[in-house]
Image (cartoon, rainbow, N blue to C red; front, top):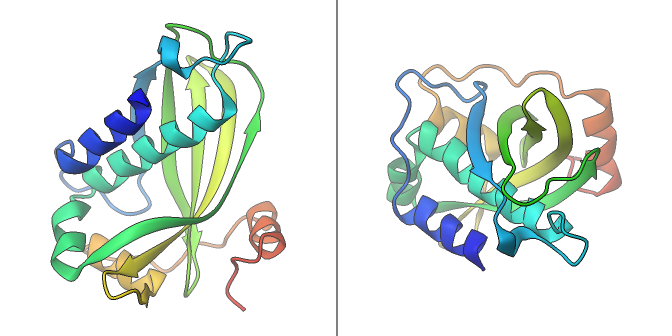
Amino acid sequence: MTRTLQLALATSRPRRPVPGRAVLDPSVTRLRVRASDLDLYRHVNNGVYLQMMDVARTHYLADLGAFGLLTERGWYPVVAASTVTYRRSLTWRQQFTITTRVLGWDPRVVYLEQVFARGEQHVARGWVAGRFLSRRGDRVPAPDVVALLDHAPPAPPHLPDDVAAWARAVDVAHR
């Protein structure tokens, strides 16, 4: 529940934009494991990783100064698909970072990578296929979102082969 409250706070009172931040620049979120994050085995519950990823993606948008721009248009982000692979456990009170970066986009979806690290140790990695919807219920093309959030929008980078294969497997890739 506390990560849900953290997400609500990060959304309603986003951190300040980072001047000059571009869509392809990584965003780093620093967190600490709380007792409420743990499962019966005393490590972070796998579902909590997804909540932490939500918080980190919200910080990524805040770093771009996206909230006002998206709100003006009535656009909001949703997760179309996600997957997480785990290497090491996180336990109570450990500090860690989540680095969020855009890997690419197609006409429908923005693909993100979110890497959990404790110091130099790789802990987990998530991939997220995100879409944007309008308050009217329409899908917003990913290139339109990128153009809104970046003053000099780049061409979409080549999506890594493993991410492209995953996008096809979970049926979110543009056809």
